[in-house]
Image (cartoon, rainbow, N blue to C red; front, side):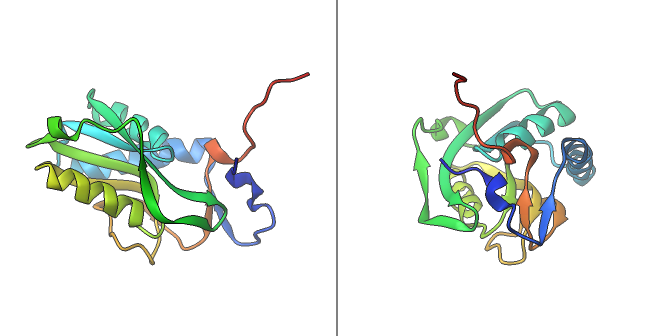
Length: 167
């Protein structure tokens, strides 16, 4: 099972701390509020988007939230050939005509975000996207971005290996 702390050998990287995550979420929420967009539902792209989506849900006062499970990254700079939707599947039919905010941690290649936005828009939902980080190579330019970087990003929720049972 890969985690992203194994980026220790990378000289250049962007490190997001828990404190900075708090700042990032509030500033991202402010930019969304200032734009006048009022999402009815926040959709997290799991797993990386779960914590940012929760943060934005509270910061924007949006109580309805859900998640869509997508796998793409398998290790540092290693991906599957294409992003893959995983079960359980989001009930997309119930989202028709709703204003959605799709949230992920980073738009790296942008392919995951593109897959999710296309799926939800085909269901008749109005979608905007928000990420903490966006990279220049992304095929999607998210509607709301806290910071742009082309470095590998170390997030505080994935900077250590998973906890295992102690002997």
